[in-house]
Image 1 (cartoon, rainbow, N blue to C red):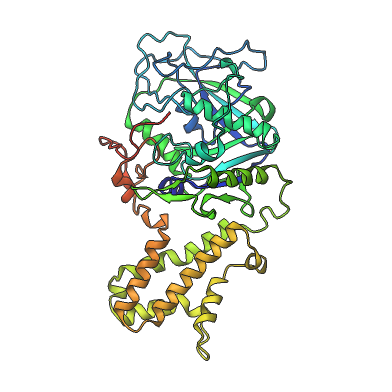
Image 2: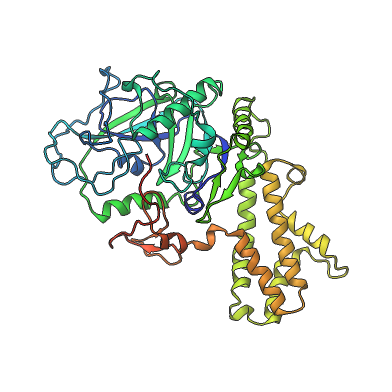
Length: 474
């Protein structure tokens, strides 16, 4: 549930049971002034939804929204003064919330009439939502592997979708429509109706909510002005995205870390492609068990251990303690350019765990690796526990081995190898951005290859280089 790390490690391989508390506000951008009742997309941030609060006619490959049903008095809310709308260039980004594929910079047709407007809907959850959260950039319509978990594991290729009338299908390009329909069909039929929707991320977090009518109360519907196409509008949106780099905030989502499913935990279920990205291995023998385990996770009784161990908080403490130390030791800067200086830095990192009266490297590593773990966490054998404890032990072991090394040339490769293996996204964060700048990282459909290798500060006024993602997929 963090925009930064999931933007860099965009091929998510994990699935969590997520809950959203009652009275949480969400947003939906559309060209319809009537409340939504069926399956549609929700955004956590209004700037995300505003991208889709546009008016446009049907285009090739985009059928537009279906006709709105006749409104009831409580469904229809209009601004008191809707006439102050400029009819100049529109800042139109279609898709996702969802009127089509993201097409940044496309202008609205010049002959849009006065009755054709965009609207921002605000809803509030009527009850606690149970969602299936897919990590990484699982809403990015790309061929890089961002959709592997959905299309290879969660979707049912044999499902016939003709049962749903077109007037009740969600907005969006055909492939996204089908994903939403199929996933909500599985939620109802195979997951015993215990899941209300799917939680994903692109340039912002979003929910495919299977039924607005059953889960949401309408707060309001407000008419939007057409937005000019300029860098200021794009920067405004990206700033809202960047505000969630370190978390969606406000306790709006809780994850069950004790029962999540990671494709990495299954033998030979993932492979690294020619570009170095992880992909799901599309073989029935490997996928069938994962699919079965997902169903079991989502349909069993609520875990009594949910949130009893916050593995994300533990991981945060580990990263906060060691990220700067490891980066500094691996850089061999002036402070660690000699063996004595490097040795002193390693000693300071491990000093709390060393009994200098009776040196024992094995015990030192154990004390180090258990620093932030309760007895319950130490005893746990959950997927999260195994992942965190294995990683934590490796950090401590590598630091210990480097401390025991007898030469500078022997110690430095151990630290650099550890840093490469960890590949923490914090090491790519920008430093010193100005108030009108954001740290640019590829977030679909934006971003360059350079942004992925070395994110940098930007005010988005230059000519964008969006060569990272390639052509949009569905």
